[in-house]
Amino acid sequence: MNKYNEQREWADRFHQQVMHQLKQVFDTEFVKVSSFEQDTQHACDYVVNNNTHISARLRTGFYRERYPNDFTIRTRTRYNGESELSKILAGNGSYLFYGFIDDSGQCIYSYKLIDLSIFRREHEAGNQYIHHKISNPLNNNDGTQLAAFDTTRMCSEMVIHTARLHRRKTEPTFAGWDGMFLSA
Image (tube, rainbow, N blue to C red):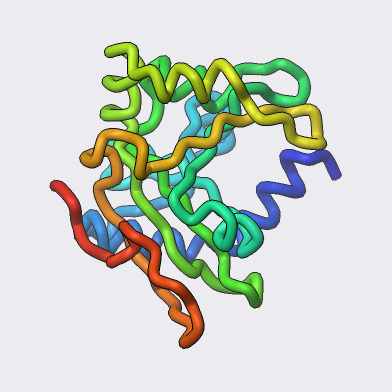
């Protein structure tokens, strides 16, 4: 099985949970999993109301503990195909659903919904932080690269929704994870 299929199989386990959250956020029942073409060519994992395209990324608890305010976008694919970043900057994707999985590996623990039009606007306006992160990508061990963005260092209106679905008694509280709508 190739890396794409492995990652897709892992993420597919969470489709129902992601779709449930999207239905609540967008107040609709019209959420579906994207087609293979939408996923691989347009950075789209879910479609809401037939016209809102959601890119999704789920990370393990390892990343949740270390980088709770970050989100990542792949800047280079293994075989130098079109990257997630280039698709987003070209205008694909309405929002990014960026979630963390709980310690059991079975449930979405928390997530944020990022407005990609604001990300594009900030990039086009020459936001130095975004340009620096894109110009200095992180190398994965699988031949891909990604840019990691700290939401606390970016435009506050970029994150339109956050939710923490599970809590542990000993868990610290991180700024921004209060489950509130930040803008419409």
